Length: 433
Image 1 (spheres, rainbow, N blue to C red):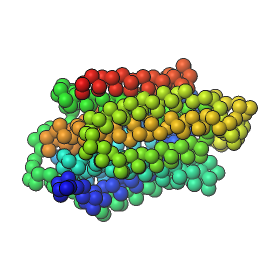
Image 2 (tube, one colour):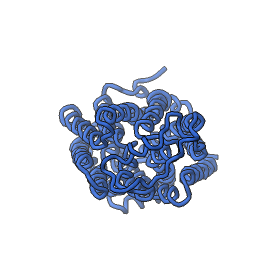
Image 3 (cartoon, rainbow, N blue to C red):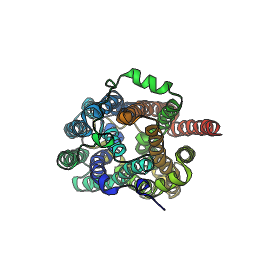
């Protein structure tokens, strides 16, 4: 029989889940487009990787500090501050007419990027140890729903605007503004709910706090796992659009369709299965499942044959990606017209399912284990530290993948990411044996 303490209170979580969903609609609208956006201004794979690294690198500097400040001053004001930065970044992205302005827009957004770590702290405030994995899984499910609706919205905007990427950026800014309004008028402060009257004694975040967390035996292993799995998965997310363009000749609308399917699967996993699996098998089992599935997905993606989709037209795709703003030809090679077929698309679809499964379970399971290892008044801070390691990995991943993509070919980065995950799986198995 399920006790009250073991049952998640969905009504209390509803405001933060809706806010995260709306916030992520803005992000998910532009994720499939950013590599192609940069390609319009002559960026090669390495520069595209550098653009992908700009946001998480700045987030690495900003999110842990804001996470610690949320412990001291409350979740709501910090979340609002980060959302204003995101809104400003999207506006600049829509106004950008050069590669440097694309970089500046991502820097502004990244410096204020505490949205997710602060939302995770809100969920931690509203849950207990028995329900926290499920609650954090629902944050992940909001990601999944965002990745379903975001690409659909991007597809519709691209269709209505004649492939105008700026229109997509302004649409993202609209959703960011909506999330600010929802937070201001709907989200209550939750920090005091865990231990009323508790005053955090820790100083605001410093890089020494990251080092101290790594030295903690259990916490250090979990944070290292979070970092290295995200090096593998973050590069996969950032460079997938470029890989699909190079290998299958898929433009922005086609790639958005793949993101929709992956998002559907993530919603099923994180919204319905992860809570049940956590209670039945435990969080460590989920981590093992995630590492193994993600390794299979990345290696499978790397082996996708270069057979463009049946409706592929090389001239049309080149014109779509180049757009009116292109100052020089795009620096990404496209497949020839004479090999079109279904095999490449079917292959990458099959590989996407284990990749989505692994990406769907790893972060909620690891964050649950991390939060359970922290004192109640340190949860926001330690999730900020976790977010910092995640951001550092996301900064390294696109550079790592972009370098390999540029110099060793499209398959090399995904094979390398799969290899990292296989090593992590073996190390985790040895650790839990």
